[in-house]
Image (cartoon, rainbow, N blue to C red; front, side, top):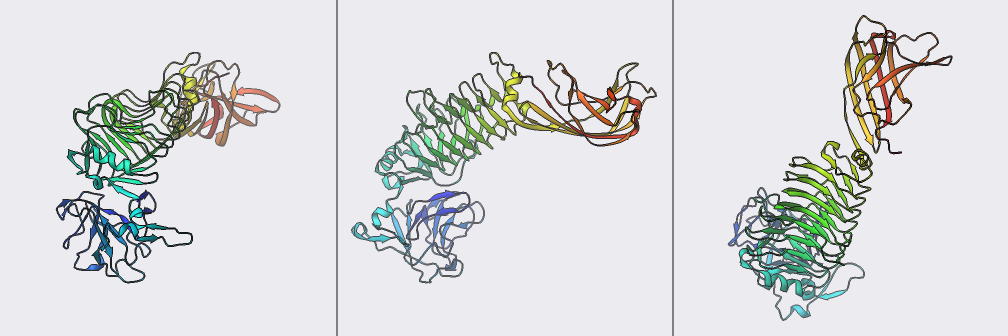
Length: 566
């Protein structure tokens, strides 16, 4: 089929018979680099251009506009991408409804070696309905060329101008109305809309070109909300809708959400929602305040939501809890009140996302959002906090998230630290071990060198690793030796010594008579390790400071609980 799908690994895939439309065709030789005006059209990055007038016709073909050197389109650069007779449609100003035919006779056609030449197609509106097309391969069925070409619809086919000035709402709605399930509806430029565009069919709505990052670095193509609009820009209501590329941008004065997902199994790839720094509306909203609206198993991949003023970048919410099982990957929300907010939506997964530079929180995991799973990401630079966990969001798990960026609001009957430990599944950091002495007849002082320490945390348990060398101690020989500076304390409530020190290596020790092993433990409420010596014929004893020389070295690790939850 001639619809184009963007794949992060393999690029564009289309049929050999009919290629995805180009925005414009050349009428003379051009320089294949940089943004430029071709045949009266100001090309922007990401648009497809049919180049067919180069002095060296081996360099003709379909190219993708770039700020630097242009590259051949991925569906028109291999020996199996085109044959004699392959059709290329040009569907923009200066070339509206033009259809060109590849006249190169080489078999196979080798790009860079074969002479690439085109001629205007002789197909007419009278012959297209009766002209047959059969795809290569066993089991292929015969279609008319007209039906084949109608699998790809451009809103310009219905009169859209896409200049950001002319109202294209009717043209877009007519294009969607003409589409059948499985069709791709394409737009480019800046189609202006004055009312919500509702996608109520299982179609792909495809904006040509690259993604936008800020309110000054906009996507190559997007729907532009008219300044008088107070409703959402794009709303999906059908199962299986795909939004790919492009997105929606708010004009100054407009209000209302930019994109609303209200259908099951909807997917958004590289879609931008850019606000106007005003109002309090949302960039991408998944779910509805209305009862019975179901939008489970949603996906946001590589999307951007920014500058929606006092609103939320990505807001997942359903009054009936019907926005469950959604996934956001590599999606960034910045420069608004809250980056992400998950509310009454169970089972949400966020991987490698970012909520940064927002005026409140990077992310709010709100009430009734159970079993939210956050894997890494960036949550810095927010005015209030990176992530806040609200009540009744039990089972939330954060992996690879800095715990200092997370705040728990009060949960009845459970302390904040317990809730945090339950949810911060994995984290880690460094610490600096040191020696100290304590006990009768006095406190000893020591100096340490070669201090190395790091820790990892899984749930309510932390494992601490460290090494250090004693470089000096005072003249007193009495007192007990301990390692200080642990990053976490054993919680109060444990009544016995927690023994768990494992020595990977020791040096410079002299054992008391009858003692053969050095170990250690942490008392409840403490964040230091008391070193001990043990022997088969002796009771456990604290390690006296006299037993370690100034060259003594310890390599150790210890695992212990950091919350008492029983």
